[in-house]
Picture 1 (cartoon, rainbow, N blue to C red):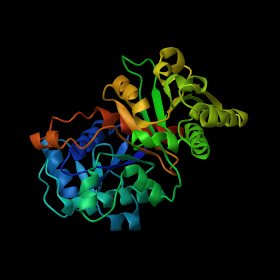
Picture 2: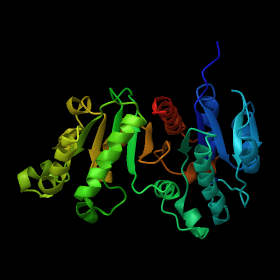
Picture 3: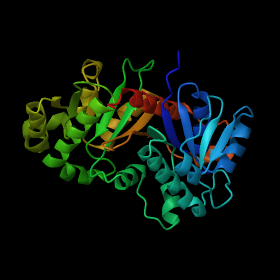
Picture 4: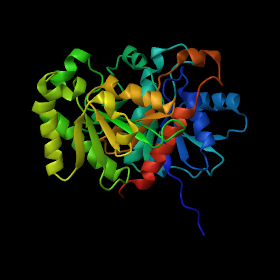
Length: 346
């Protein structure tokens, strides 16, 4: 009986001077019997690094030109495939070099193309350094914004998730109504149309990419005590509650707004497939504490599956050499992407 095919995941290796290349290689090799990982980066550099990590790691490089003519070659479970995106300067671990900025950006373009051409089924991104790309002369604000722009997506939603662990009885997903805004701008950004669109995206993607038929979404209030009937703010009355009512009228299982200081209790979490927090530091500190390094960043609303680690480039660890970086978040990001591939609507 033929074995089922493995999910094929494009993995961008991120900032070459950081820990991204190492954790991408280590995770891809560790999961090679669960996921076919296609690394996107400089073949020569990744091969050299792999030999340092574990001489048993086997790799094969393929050019983008060859891919466009022949598609993704077969590799088996004992060899990792690399789509070659050559760097422009020698890598010194821990030291940023803007000469490599455009090559890092190319890995994102290739990842998007790999899904659009159906070479791969999802994308996992290792951390990159925004400053390297900006210093290379390209305005760049982050992975999420870049993927949205390149796929012509008008609005995306940032969601972080954690698998169940010793401290967390079930998976936890926290989506954000606003992301990287100064706190004084958050209240003005909570608008009816934007919040409604965010809920629509969460509901749609939980159904289509996670296989949850009727997702349960719990919404946090913006203000202390969810506004306390207007005494501590009017956003709940004027915006958040009307959006929740509209969602309910549309047949969605959405409830709230709940005071954020009591929402993250087990009695609520066990009823939720996703929590919608109003701003970055309302929801993410809870998740990152509960996940203990096993969190994963997921971009909702894109016409492709994209997950990422929930940490940065860790240049200081990379400068020490291989073996210091924790691969846990990358492993979870790849497993979540693979699970989403298996559950998404075909």
